[in-house]
Length: 49
Ligand SMILES: [Zn+2]
Image (cartoon, rainbow, N blue to C red; front, side):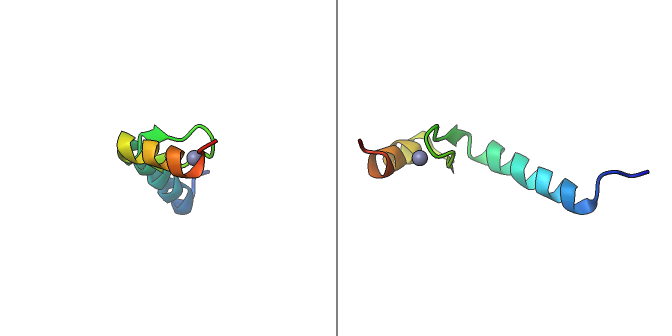
């Protein structure tokens, strides 16, 4: 009857924490960052033109 396995819950929690702790997401590659500054640096280094 229980459709959610412990692994599913762990994965969901991990994903939630990842999104919660890294709210700044790169729209181009989907990578996440804790600080807006890190995201800007990533964009400049990785997606510069
Ligand atoms: Zn990116």
